[in-house]
Length: 362
Ligand SMILES: C[S@@+](CC[C@H](N)C(=O)[O-])C[C@H]1O[C@@H](n2cnc3c(N)ncnc32)[C@H](O)[C@@H]1O
Picture 1 (spheres, rainbow, N blue to C red):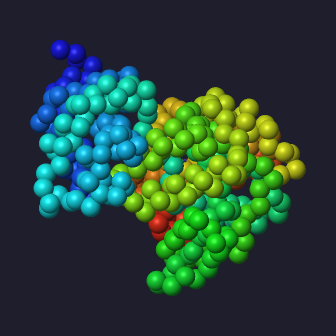
Picture 2 (picture 1 turned 90 degrees about the vertical axis):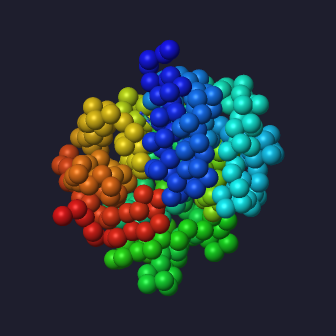
Picture 3 (picture 1 turned 60 degrees about the vertical axis):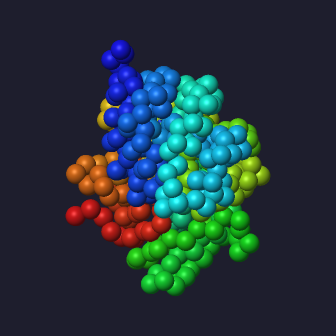
């Protein structure tokens, strides 16, 4: 019996812990996770993951969703709204079909678990990012050189192509972006974010440990498989954004947020104002690596004026507290003539559905 956190029993326990955490957002995954918690054959497939940390239920569910979206598990599609399915848990129990489908395609599922990592790119964060970038641009008075760290497929970097509607009291109060955009974002807003124009970019680049090439059908397909089955709006938006991204290439460098930051930032033209952003990236790094990232940005800031924009949870955005990890913040750190200033500009929803401009931690 292996004792590295990947014994069938330990993996089944992971499903048991995952079920209550996911069932609000995905009743299907909640139900399947509860069943997998008592099924060592299915839960044990996760042992194919290279490390215990990677052996997470979401990886197995994404591997199966990938098959469903590719049309390779048609008997399961009826349970997946993202594949046009209309059956719900009140219509019956999907577990026997799921179990049989997974075990029949065991080799494909294990191969996916062995070689893939769950990966996301939340387009909805673009509107809050837009407001922060516009704030920086207005202050800097010149176009921006934007480096997005942990950018995934770099979808938010295409925000000029999206339609952004700010909504206050149920009414659209301001809109930016093309009226005929295929990606349409609504953000409920309190306060007065700077929302007078789309920011201009003299240069854009992304950096990611596992970049996703939007034009690569296989990579783009995996990103879609990592969306949960009830999130049809999110999937539609992701697909539309991937199409936009394929038409608007941005260089995305494969590399580390800390070790490769300076090298990529050095490519930014010196007559543009450098902005380094990170949205739900540092949350996945160890504390030491987060501190090293902070130091890496600071050492660039010692040499040139820049802004750092972070959208992350409490304790990760500079100036916020770790005991507020359940809340998410939009933070801005400026370096001017080598001097650093941290500010929290808004409280945000983690998927960018709402924004409270001017609200910071108390
Ligand atoms: C949760 S995703 C967020 C993606 C995107 N920023 C967004 O908001 O949708 C985290 C991203 O960080 C990347 N990442 C994780 N650790 C990294 C590191 N050390 N260096 C660079 N990228 C990293 C992952 O590959 C992934 O694309």
